[in-house]
Length: 398
Image 1 (cartoon, rainbow, N blue to C red):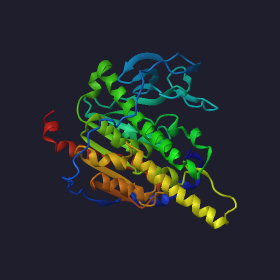
Image 2: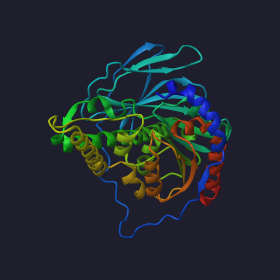
Image 3: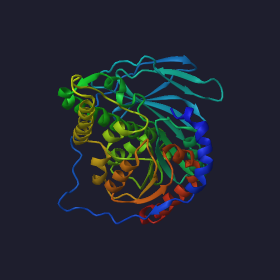
Image 4: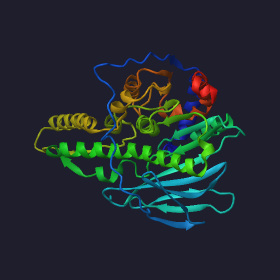
């Protein structure tokens, strides 16, 4: 999605990235727990998943995927080998089928021999991609769970992951569900009398998308535990990038905690992000009274948008703004672009406060430039991770 923007951004990057090498650092503050608001149990937090079946796919080229079986609430398929690891796709069955997209999602796994090409469909299943890459070390330091952006592992993210491998970390890269937010269900016109209904739909889609990343990651970890347990030795760290950062809190909640967490270009209040992002993720077509003056029609639409965000946030059970304050204490780092318009910078501030004001590195850049510079920050990020891990006496003894 970002590729068409990259040529002019390359020049911007050349000017901005040098200043990004020295971010403004907000040191971590001691997390304050409000005794009047004890952590809530996660009962009822999770959208329901049916026992998984076989998702719909067509093999266009190469060998068919290998059905590895059911892990937790998902079915895991080995889609092919990649350099230093393996590519998987993970499917969980929907409660309610959705309208099939016009063109199915095409998954290509590049192999040393013949590429494997599959067409994946998401009418009856939610489908998540995962790439497991081994550390460039005989004795891996631990496992990094890398939740990717909607670019499904961009070139910059690949370079960042390679640096993590070189520093001795196994990496499990988990993409967002391939039918992100089921956008085709949001393109209908609706009027003000349907606002309540659409707020519920928005919260439902947000919850299912964010929870799906947690379900898929849990399934991948269960798969590794059975098939290759050495991958799970050592500390576990979650790094969430952009869309992946939105799902990181609910994943950490699902896992019961991790040894460290890093948020890159993240935010909280997903309804706000969806409606205000410069990517125009969601622009509802709100029908108002055409007999009203233009200014009044515009005001009615703005009031409806504001109310839609408010209601959807209230009804979302997995939004980072609602989940982050409930997380167990986890050493946390944020990398934020002060000029971010894609995940608006003010929503990054919301996440920062919801997480209890952890250490934060602020860059004078927007979202895309932040990610263009991500490979340059890999060593700095790994130094931070290894520093907090080393200060944990239980991990230091392991």
